[in-house]
Amino acid sequence: MDGIFKNLDLPGDLKKLDENELKKAAEEIREYMIRTVADNGGHLAASLGVVELSLALHSTFESPRDQIIWDVGHQSYPHKLLTGRWEQFPSLRKQGGLCGFPKPEESEHDPFLTGHSSTSISAALGLAQARDFNGEDYQVIAVIGDGALTGGMAFEALNHAGHIKADMLVVLNDNEMSISSNVGSMSSYLARIRSDPKYSRIKKDFENFVGRIPWIGKQALDSAEKIKGGLKYLVMPGVIFEELGFTYFGPVDGHNIPALKRVLTQANRMQGPVLIHTVTEKGKGYHYAEKAPEKFHGIGPFDLENGQLLKKKKKSSYTEVFGNALVKLSRENPRITAITAAMTAGTGLTGFAEEFPDRFYDVGIAEQHAVTMAGALAAGGMQPVVAIYSTFLQRAYDQIIHDVCLQKLPVIFAVDRAGITGEDGETHQGLFDLNYLRSIPNMSIMAPANEDELQHMLKTALEYKDGPVAFRYPRDKVEGVELDEPQTLPWGKAELLKSGEDILIIAAGTLVNSALKASEKLFWQGIKPALINARFIKPLDEDLIVSWAQKCGRVVTIEENVLAGGFGSGVMELLEKRGLELPVKRLGIDDQFVAHGLRAEMLSNYNLDADGIYRETVNFVNGKAAKEQG
Ligand SMILES: Cc1ncc(C[n+]2csc(CCOP(=O)(O)OP(=O)(O)O)c2C)c(N)n1
Image (cartoon, rainbow, N blue to C red; front, side, top):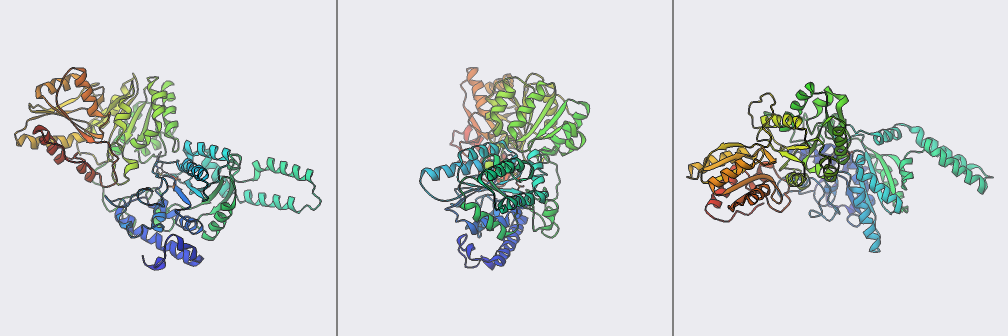
C-alpha cells in the first residue's frame, strides 16, 4: 500500500486521519477500484457510490468488533480495501482470488455472507440478538440500498427490529437506482424526502418554536407532542421508519465524510434501532459511470480512457434471443405479459418494456411477489412470462409450489443464468433450478441446446395450457446457428442426434454441444456412443431414452446443475421405474457450491467441457474412477 495508506494499520488507523486526509483516501480508493475493475470487470458503480460512506463507517466504528453487513454486497469493494484486502484486490473475481461479494471465509470483517438482495437487516438483527444473548457490547450495522429496500425481506426485518427495539443501525444508501432506475412507492417516498428541503426545515422550526415557549406547562407540552404527532405525517421526513419503531436521521449527504461521521456517532449513542438515510450518487468519481450507472453496475473489462467495453460483441446472448423472440410473439398475442424483478435489461426485457409498456411489470427486487402475481394473471386468463435468473428464483420456491403449480396455472418461467454463471461466484450460480423445479407436480421443464431451440421452447410453452412451464438457459453467447421462425416442439419429445451401440449419452441444455464434440472423439477412439438431446427434463421422453439405453447397455447423463435430484436423477428414476438395471454415470455438480471464476474454467474444472465429458465417459466405459471435481 502506498500513498495515504502507507504505514497505516487498517481499518483502525483511519481514525488518525483528518478531513483532508480522508478525502485523499477516498480519491486513492476510487482510482484503485476503477483501474482494477477496468482489468477484471465487476460491480463498479455501486462501489464508487459508497467510498465516503465506507471511510466514515470504518473511521467511526471498530471492525471486526463492530459488524458491518453490506446488502447484496456488490458495493463492498471499498470495505474490502479498507479491511486487509488491498494487496489481493487485483485478483478480484478471478478463480482463487477475492470474491466480488462479502464472504466470512475470506475475512473476519465480513460477518455474514451476502449476494442476494434484501437480507442485511435480518442478518443484522440476528447478530444483534446473539450479541445481547452473549452479554457483549458492540454495534451491528446493515447498509442497504434503496433498491434492496424494495425486497419484502427488508420490510419484514424492519417490522421485527422496530417491534423488539433491537439496538442496531440501518444505513439506507439511497442513490435512486436499483440496477436501473428504482421503482415503487417507497422509492417515490424517498425521492420526496430527498428533494424537499421543507421537510427538514419545518421539523426543526417546529421543535425550536415549542422549545422556546417559556410558560409551557406539562399539559401544553403534551398537546404540543400530540400536534407534533399529527403534524409529523405532513412534515417529518422518514415518518414511515419512525412508525416502524426506528429513530430516523437524514437525509444526510453520503459523500460528506464529516457529516456522516457526526450522524453515525450520534446514532451509535442511541438505544433501539436507528435508520440513517444517506443520499449518494451511483458511479461517483468516474465520469462514465456517473453518466451511465446502469452500464457500470456490473461491467466487463473496459477501456479506462473512454469507458468502452474491451471485448467487442461478436455474438448475441441467449438472453437477447429470448427477449427478441418474446417481442416477436407478443406482437401476435395480446395476452402475453412480462414480469421482471428489477432486472429488465439483465433478463432481456428492455425491448418488450419499450414496445408493450402496458403489459410489462418491473416489480422491484420482489421475486416472490412476481411469481404469485404471475399466477393470478394466469388465473385471470393472461399469459404471464416471468423472467428471473435461476439463482433469484430460489426466493420464490413456495410461491411456485403454492400459487402456481398447485393450481396448475400456465405461468411461463424464463429461467435465465441457469448453470455456471462465472465470476459472481457461489451466490449467483444457477445450479439448483432443475432439482427444485423437477420435484414439483404439474411443472414442466425444458432446456434448449441452442438459441433456435430457445425460441421454439418459448413458443411451445405459450401453446401449452395445462400448467406451468419453465425453460432454462445459460449466461453465455449463443452457438451461432441460424434462427428459424419460432415453432412448436413436439411435447415431451427428445432429439436423437447420433445412433450408437456402446454407450448412451443424454445431455440437457447447451452441454449437448460439448457432448457432441466428445462423442465424435469417442467414436475415433473406437467407442460408438448414441447421443440424445433431452430438450425436456420433465416430462422425459421415456420411450426414446429407454429403448436406446437398452440398446447401448449403459448410460451417461450430462447436466449443468447439482446432481442430487437433477436431470440425471430423473433418468435413473425412469430406469428404475422400467425395471432396467443398467450402469449409469451422471455428470454434473456433485454436492458442493461452485466458487467464482470464468464460466469456461469452471465447466472444465467440473468435467463438463468436451474434454471432461470425453475423459469421464472413457473412464466409465473402462470401469475407472472419476476425476476429482473442483
Ligand atoms: C434476490 C435478488 N434479486 C436480484 C438481485 C440482482 N441485483 C443485484 S444488485 C441489484 C440492485 C440493488 O440496488 P440497490 O440496493 O439500490 O444498490 P445500488 O446498486 O444502487 O447501490 C439487483 C436487482 C439480487 N442480488 N438479489
